Length: 92
Image 1: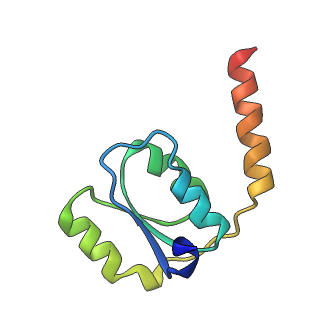
Image 2: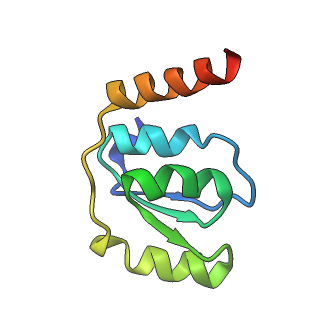
């Protein structure tokens, strides 16, 4: 409910493996500002959002300019199928 009420999701992590909150924000059609680190980059380069420098000034500027971030269409079912397929390919 908190994320749904927000106009923008800001993820200021220094380290992320699989940033589930970004997927949740995409499902809710939220604009995203996130630090440019591996896990965040892997999601946002594919689905949209604003990757910013992993610094206070990077986050500050990203939040100032969040209104210009485009919201791309995110299909959670397609993402789930793609993720499952990738996981199964590693196992086989």
